[in-house]
Amino acid sequence: MSNFVKSFSFVALALLVLLTGVAITANAAGLTASITSPTAGSTFTVGQTVNLSADSTSAIGAVNYIWSFSDGTVSRAGQNQTVTFATAGTKTITVLAGDASGASDTKTVSVTVTGVSTKPVISNIHAINITQTGVTITWDTDIAATSRVIYDTTSHPDITGQTAPNFGYAISTPEDATKVTSHSVVITGLSPATKYYFRVISQG
Image (cartoon, rainbow, N blue to C red; front, side, top):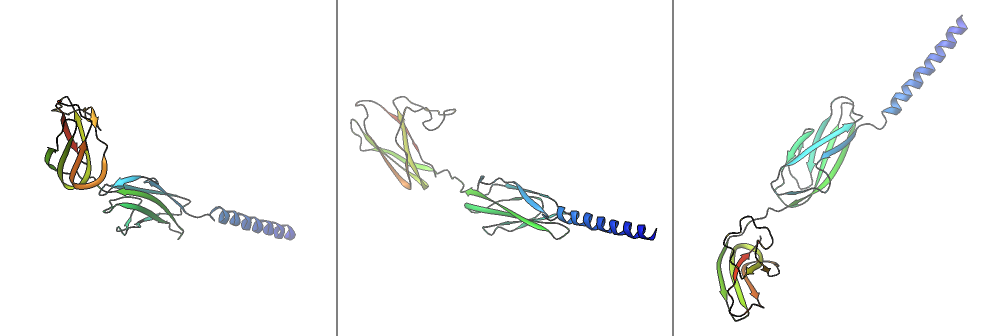
C-alpha cells in the first residue's frame, strides 16, 4: 500500500506540473490591443471630431487605455475617446493598453488631416479689353484663391439647384490653380456681335 501511495503521489505531482505548464503557455502571448476607430488612411479636416475606439484580447482584469498623438496633441485616457486636430498633416495615433497583470501592448494608425476650405469673398468684377471675339475678366478676392470663368449666351440669373462645375453655363475656362487675390482670365473665340453672360469662380 505504501508503494502504491508513493506512486500515485508522484503521478499526481507530474500531472500538476503539466497542467501548470499548459496554463503558462496559453497566456504567453499576453495582452493584444487593437484600434477599431479610426481606420488607417482615414481623412479628416482641421477641427473635425475624430472618434477613438480600442479593444483588446487575452487581457487579465481591467484594461487601461492611453491615447497619444504624433503632433503633440494632449494625450487622453479611456477605451473610447475623441480628439480634434488643430493643424493639417499626417497624424499618427497610438493607443497603449495595459491590464491588471502588467501586460501591455501598443497599436498605431495614421490618418490625414486637411485644412478647412475657406470661401473667398469676390469683389471688383470687371470686363475689360473687349474685342469682337474676346474679353478679359478681372476680379479680386479677400484671400488667395483659384480663378475660373463660366459663360453662356443665355442668362442664368438663378443657379439654385444647378450642379458643379458649370452650374448650368455652357462654357468654362480652364481653372487656374495658382491661388491669388487679383484675378485675370482672358477669354477668346467669342462670336462677334453676341451678348455673353458670365460668372467668376474662385476657391480658397
